[in-house]
Length: 226
Image (cartoon, rainbow, N blue to C red; front, side):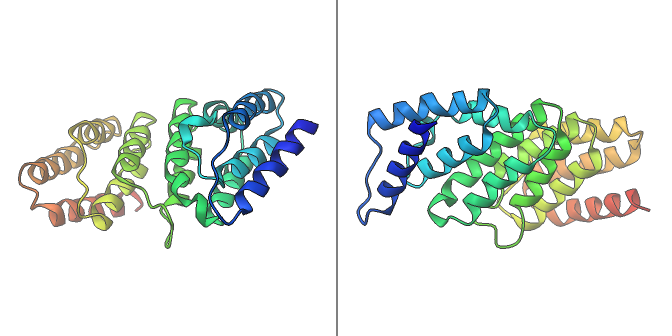
């Protein structure tokens, strides 16, 4: 692990320089070799330390081996290491641009690994007040589709309501609308499914029915919890 310590110190010094410096090909190559090996040997803390240090020098994400790290993080039964990574990025302003793409990768992986509740926690963490990287349209789409696919229709309705209420420029896709409709049918909520689907269809056709959709969503969510 001496090479890890040397590379960590090198990257830290580079990040502290007054003038921006990129990683050399040799340094990126060493990172690409180290992170997967650390993940394979279940040394996630070291892999996270190396990753967050590398992000300080503003590399392109595609130059770092994030896939093994994401897979390793989302294979665990708890969110300890995942939240450690996101919290570190949150408290490191230069790393804020990386929060959204990394969180989206985590979200997709949790849904793929049949851990929708972990994915939901990532979504809720990202949409907190004053979040430096609030969910974008693609993020909402993944959340809504993933929750519907895992028969968590109530939480999918909450996510849809949040998207429409706080992001007037966002509209659900036809695919997401169909999944919400089918998820409600699976819950034997036929009338609710028909009403919401009709309201969203009008919204998608003229873009001027948002308040009506929100009224339907608010009523369905309130009735669900009664």
